[in-house]
Length: 382
Image (cartoon, rainbow, N blue to C red; front, side, top):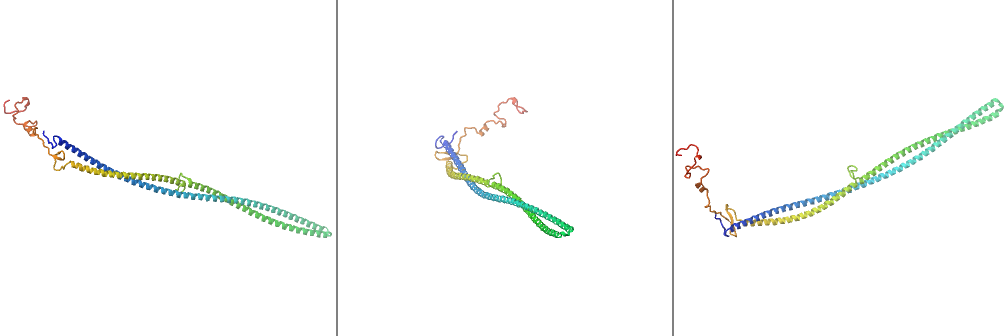
C-alpha cells in the first residue's frame, strides 16, 4: 500500500512530524503545569498575608487584655489597702473601748468602796442615834424617878421642902439635860437619816457605774468582735483566692495573681505576636517570591504556549489531514491511499453470494441434494 513520503525521504517526514508533535504537546503540558504552579503560589501568598494580618490583630488584642488586667490589679490592691486601713482603725477603736471598760470597772470599784464607806458611816450614825436615844430615855427615866422622889419627899415631910426644892431643881436640871439629850438624839437620828440617804445615793451610783461598766464591757467585747471580723475581712481582701470576698469582688492577691497571669499571657501573646510577625514577614517574603515565581511561570507558560503554537500550523480548513514536515516547517498533508488491490463492497456484492440475499435461478447453482428441498415444486422434472 503506497503511503505519502515527505521531502525528507522515506519515513523521515512521519518521524519528524511525530517528534515535533510530541515536543509541542510536552511544551503545552509544561506551560499548563507552570500556570497551575503560578496560581497555587499566588493563592499561598494570599493565605500567608491573611494569616499574618490575623496574627497581628491577635497580638494587639492580647496586649490590650494585659493592660486591662494590670489596671484591675492596681485598683484591687488599692481596695485591699483601704480595707487594711479600716481594719487597723477598728482595732484601734476596740483598744480604746477596752481601755474605757477598764476605766469604768475601776470607777465601779471606787463607787462600790465609797458606797461601803457611806453604809458604814450610816450604820455608825444609826448606832450613835440609838445610843443617844437610849441615853435620853435613861435621863427621862431618871428625871421621872427624881420627880417621884421629890414628890414623895414633899408629901412625906414639909421640912424637907428645901431638900425637895433642891431635888426639884435637880429634877429640872435633869429634865433639861434629858431635853438636851433628846435634842441630840433627834439630831443624831436626822444625821443617821442623811447618812442613810447618802448611802442609798452611793449605792445607786455604784449600781449605775456597774451598769455602765457592764455596757462598756459589752461594747468592748463587740468592738473586739468587730475588730476580729474587720481583721479577718482585711485578711480576706488581702489574700483570699478561693472565691469572692464581698459584693462579687475578689481580693488583692486574687487580682495580683490574675494580673500576673495576664502579664504572662501578654508576654506569651507578645512573643506569639513577634513570632506571627516574623511568620508574616516570612510569609510576605515567600508570597513575594511566589508571586515572582508565578510571574516567571506565567511568562514561561506564555513563551511555551507561543512556542507550542509555532510548532502547529492553523487547523482551519484542514479537517481530515495529517501533520507533516519537510524537515524545517510543519504543514498539513492530504491522506492518499491506493486501495485497488483490496476487495471493495461493490466488488464483493457482485462477485460473492450473500448469506442473507435472495436469488432467482442463479447460474452458479448446478446441483442440489434433494434433502435440501422442501415444499411443493412446480415445473420441471426431478
